[in-house]
Image (tube, rainbow over all chains, first blue to last red; front, side, top):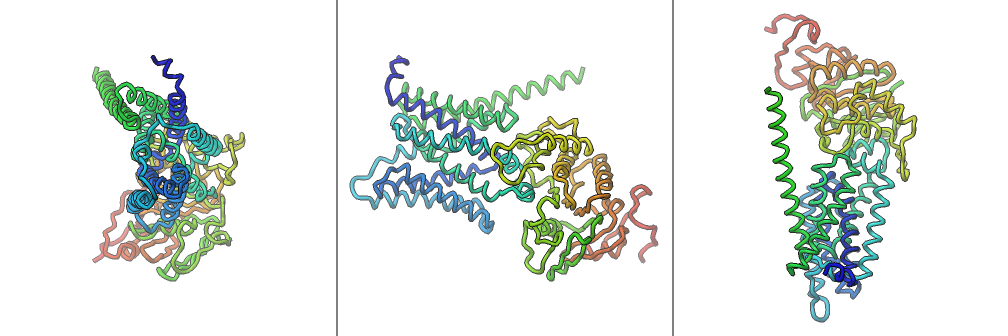
Length: 281
Length: 244
């Protein structure tokens, strides 16, 4: 049954999309978590909903609208954040709801029957098209190249941005670049898990990888692999139980994270007991 | 040669710091110590007046200035090894693609790590370090860039006593070819090590020598403070009579 499924193009597309989305998540997720930008990414993700609405309103591809709005929102957020006058959580909250509001307004203003927005909010991996795949591949390639080619700089930037700035590294440029990368990776994920569920795919694989792998590089690679497992596993579950794919991927990710967390802490506490028992003898 | 010229009108902070100086700036929390360091670095713009470092505006002196931040401002769980952090001090600021450290960079880093006493823990993760080891790593990271002026923010806070003595003897050695300014609220620890002292609590008062007396401390903290002197090795006060 499984191999007959593989012959369908939409299944092939879904699998390629999973691999690409996980690669993006693995790389960017690690940076987001270490730089404490998870909520910031949530804010950027939700502003892209405004872009989806804009796309429908102008009659262009909604994903391109999302790309446009999330990139400009991320640069706006980065600019205001650098000015340092506004608290970050206030900024995130504002952009978060502004994006959703704009999306709703654009959809209301657009002529004709309102489109089905659920696939952008919650993702729909089975309807991914070849064009989507090309866009995702381009994004994954772009992000991988930027992170790999400037890897030593990212390491210094994430660990101690101030020190990097003092040594003369262009941290302003790196910060804007990071925010742009977050924005476009959100767009890459929209088709797979959707705007609302993006956060799970950014955080769960990375958090699991972080429990077992110590270096930045191995965390990125392993979380990409784990993310791939979640996407394909979620896809399989959604197919066999007939539930929405985006939600299935997220629920699977969170359940796996909780399981690994509990098992890991049980193992650690057993190890600790053994160690203290050995010391007592 | 004058390394730093500070002329800030409000608050009254004026001083010139010469080459070879080893200045300890003490003051209570919130007195503006970190802000002063950051204005020397060009990270904060002073509201009034101006600062010159090596005859240039702050931030334009480049690699001549080395800065060791407070430990508490950094994320201790970041997945990186000690040796890697030290090497980041030698990163080429020009954003070179596919940057690899040269053999010279690595030799330099090894030499400094040996001097500072962290070469044996170079493969350890940052999250596994004690406060003292972490502080020494930050000092090493700054030193690999071969600065001429070293600024340290609370280098002995969160550090065990042995590491503290080690850090001070290291700084004394470095002072032979480096101007050093260190900032701390721990006035008793610092006064027996530095060459001169200044107090900063909104206004900066330069004291020249390193001897602390009640007058200094009282102006510094804005209220009468009792000073307690320990035995000889850590003596910071001359013997003195009862105040009243």
